[in-house]
Amino acid sequence: MITTTDLTKVYRTRDREITALDGVNLHVREGEVFGVVGQSGAGKSSLIRCVNLLERPTSGTVTVDGQDLTALAGRGRRAGAELRQARSRIGMVFQHFNLLSSRTVQGNVELPLEILGLSGKERSRKALELLDLVGLADKAKVHPGQLSGGQKQRVGIARALAGDPKVLLSDEATSALDPETTRSVLQLLRDLNRQLGLTVLLITHEMDVVKAVCDSAALMRDGGVVESGTVSELLATPGSELARELFPVGGEVADDSRTVVDVTFHGETATEPVISQLSRTYNVDISILGAAMDTVGGKQVGRMRIELPGRYDDNVVPIGFLREQGLTVDVVGRSEDRGSRPAELVKEVAK
Ligand SMILES: Nc1ncnc2c1ncn2[C@@H]1O[C@H](COP(=O)(O)OP(=O)(O)OP(=O)(O)O)[C@@H](O)[C@H]1O
Ligand SMILES: [Mg+2]
Image 1: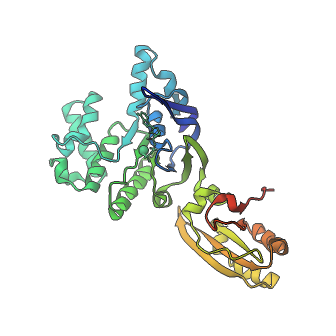
Image 2: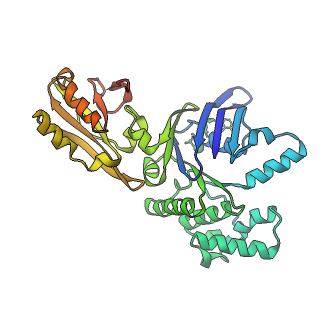
Image 3: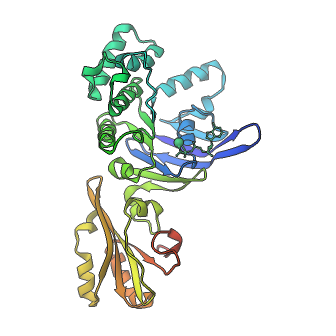
């Protein structure tokens, strides 16, 4: 549904150039909620602004719903009209809502409909329908100043849906909201995704948001995508940073006389009593150092940090057993900085 190919964005200021996007290849499937995470300055907003051509990419292509938007940008009047048309099918939700305080709630939702050239009657009908969809039918006549943050964002979402978009882009739509309101706005996005078959690309810096609503996620760093995939693919990837942040496990690594492994359960394996089987089969005592279990997309997933007696060499067979059960296993190596960085994981080449 959304594909970027070698997308770059270089900002040129008077005295320097800033490469905000450095060859981004991203693929968002139709009907999924896709989360982009990354530290401040990683290029997340630049990416989303390039996807709807609010910002003109320096090079590379952006395809949305089969249409190459970059090819349409700046190619004469007809292409310009096509680009406007295509962009009206991409909704955008902003962190600070960007509502006009002088207009009523309904007036705000009607704004894009005016631009699309709908008659007054049609605009009013459509706006009320959208406000109903976001649960604000009774607030049509009030001004944004009289609304709570969560309600304002619902108006922002209704407005973004005015052009019947197939794609909704959201840049930190919930980061100005409290946790409770965040949950309800996320639930709304998820419902719209399901009800309308809307593809959602959202940016967030909160892993909880990814956990709550995303089917897939990408991690950005220094203008590039360093990891991406469905949440279950990420959980099944040894050494995945996103997986570790989604499911952090505590637990100190003592010394190399013991072997510490992080085991990720996903899908069917989560309910199987694999650890006790391991213990019985190999007659080893297993200590659980830390664990995190959760439900993602209706499936139970989790990570567990366990300790086996003896060095790694003594535990090759039990570790192989865990892998055979379909679990993702990371062997945690010895390091000065214990327990959190991917570099310390003994990454083994998948067979
Ligand atoms: N209009 C601009 N002109 C110049 N530099 C810019 C512009 N917009 C962004 N940048 C720079 O590009 C880089 C990426 O910025 P971007 O806003 O995409 O990051 P981000 O991941 O959204 O960060 P945050 O989490 O803080 O919102 C940063 O170094 C930023 O300073
Ligand atoms: Mg940003």
